[in-house]
Image: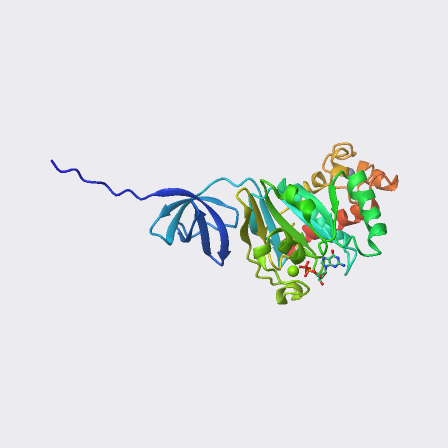
Length: 302
Ligand SMILES: Nc1nc2c(ncn2[C@@H]2O[C@H](COP(=O)(O)OP(=O)(O)O)[C@@H](O)[C@H]2O)c(=O)[nH]1
Ligand SMILES: [Mg+2]
Ligand SMILES: [Zn+2]
């Protein structure tokens, strides 16, 4: 009697570690595969967990996408585009120099709140003479009032405080140009070889960025997703009526306004506007809120 071995396609769970347009590299059991996707419509992002049907040593087909824990977006011509998924935390790097922009920080925090991702604010360049005053200001608002975690360091010196924070997590680093992201990346991942002190061409080129994220293993259990040229998280996918929920200082006041569909911009007897007038809510944060609402209301016109 002859037995026939039935060749079944092998299916493995894989992780998308980089993308180039619609080409994805996936990793499974420490092997990397160039992938082709089954359907035409599905778009994947770095961080996605997928079922891979192994074709040969270098190629695999993406069969299915596992549900995403969360998703972050970048903004692209007044739209939000997916950039990475299944992120545990975002390190938002800020520095007093070259040019701190408080609304950049606010928009990063908001993206984290809406994506249910833990943000940690890194104040870099602690060696600079201007940093103590700047840092006190940031601590007073973002830590004492809003309860965000803040770490201060000088990446030129060392980033040892970050090692513990990166353990067992998938982390994304974001910050304005020149704050020290590449310097930090090289400290925590020496093989990254990120070039420092230079502004990548796409960073200041205006609207159309071609950011491709890549996932690096810092160690067996800790990953860093690098998004070179990522200038801003996208917020255009937010709904006007949900936005206040992502401001911790507004959250507890929602439902206390006169109108239950209040968006807290110019309605009478608004609990949030009252809190701004009574200096319970920081004016700079509220201005950021109204500015964002304004842009979200206009987006349908683009
Ligand atoms: N004084 C000071 N300069 C720093 C520090 N970290 C980075 N820099 C400098 O800031 C500049 C921009 O750093 P880079 O890592 O390229 O910033 P990126 O644009 O965010 O990637 C470089 O000249 C760095 O050497 C720091 O902790 N203190
Ligand atoms: Mg850089
Ligand atoms: Zn209101």
